Image 1 (spheres, rainbow, N blue to C red):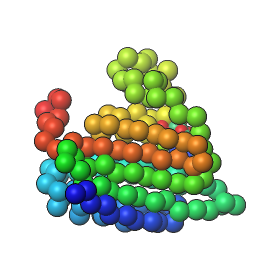
Image 2: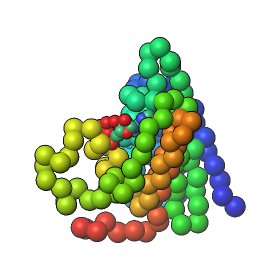
Image 3: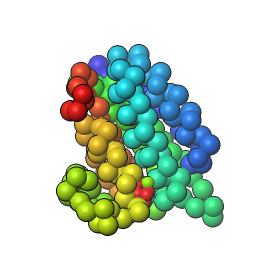
Image 4: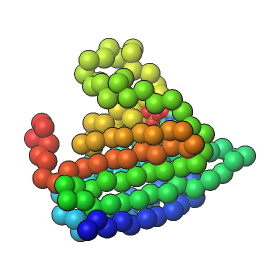
Length: 145
Ligand SMILES: Nc1ncnc2c1ncn2[C@@H]1O[C@H](COP(=O)(O)OP(=O)(O)O)[C@@H](O)[C@H]1O
Ligand SMILES: [Mg+2]
């Protein structure tokens, strides 16, 4: 049976620490290595930072809902907000940075690239607010290790 752990934080930068600490506890318990947990922390931080920076504003503050789920094959972390949505372009986002010239990489857009690089699967749904689902599988060795 799958188990969920949910956490709701104000969409403010100073609360993202709490998400990282919770992630560490859950992923460590699930058996992930420190290196895998570090990668997940960076990806989750990017997703939460996007909510803080892009979903809400001072005029319209909100919360981030984080749901951790331990599945048979790994862990999935859903980061959800009800702020401003955006048009996600999966094809370009999943493309590797290696194929790009430096000047093609805009100042924005690195967060989603990093999530793709650090996780095994990244899903983004943005309609009424945004939902990012990050998945890390058990026992996957780093490609470059
Ligand atoms: N949760 C979100 N809510 C609204 N817009 C978002 C969200 N996440 C990402 N975006 C949009 O996608 C763009 C790309 O995100 P990202 O790759 O992290 O780059 P950056 O944050 O540096 O702009 C952002 O600039 C923003 O327009
Ligand atoms: Mg970002």
